Length: 311
Image 1 (cartoon, rainbow, N blue to C red):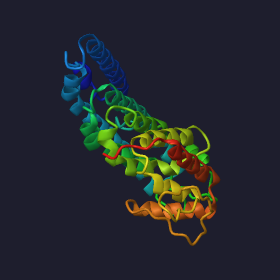
Image 2 (image 1 turned 180 degrees about the horizontal axis):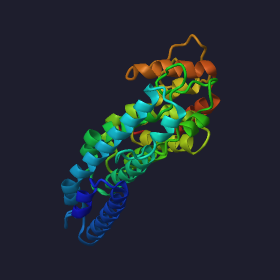
Image 3 (image 1 turned 45 degrees about the horizontal axis):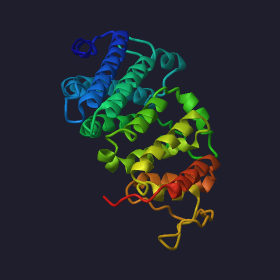
Image 4 (image 1 turned 30 degrees about the vertical axis):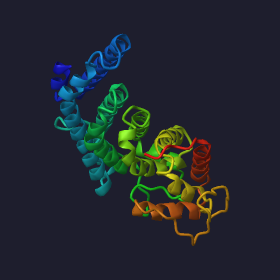
């Protein structure tokens, strides 16, 4: 692990990817050793060898994740802001003067996200929660903001139904990071870190709402990830899902069963994410059936959940 964390900064991106795969295997092995010791000696009878390994090697992994995501974000913004010729656009995805291609950076970041997911799942008692919140999540949020395809109206990556099918937008953007990011969030909120990261659910869940419009694996994965968040806090995303579903807000706080299509003049209420309010109202205006159906299914999922204890 020490050698791989050193070579993860090698100039050759292929070596970096191989190092990430080796690091992932090493962390998984240490996690299995920790589970075996726990079953043999009890929870407090031995130390999980994964925990000191995380403390020692995570700074190197976080630094490489931050550097790779910054390089990818910079490359994407450059290609979007400059109206380049087709020949130059094709050339920007090729290694030039030692610079890695965007596709290679996406492969590396997906491997690093797998490591993040493994550390969340394998560490005990939310040991990795602070590291995820302070180091990994800001990078994930920035990547998602950059990945969401932009439309012609300058909506900042948000899809408005009636303009272009979201699946074709994602195909056009050719991003291979959408599913790895969504799966990383799903694993995180299914791990022992989930309760320590409950404060991230409003922003993380809202970040996944635009993906509901996708008819395919991206939309399905986003729904599964949001379900994992709802199992932690069923009320954190209820207002947003209610708005997107097109269901009227109940007059009584204990009644959530009335279903009435919201008119175009209805203003959605998002107290925490103002930018998404505009997007939500536009989605409902154009009657995005896929998005509203997924949101409605998640509302039904919330109703089937048992009552959660007050923390």
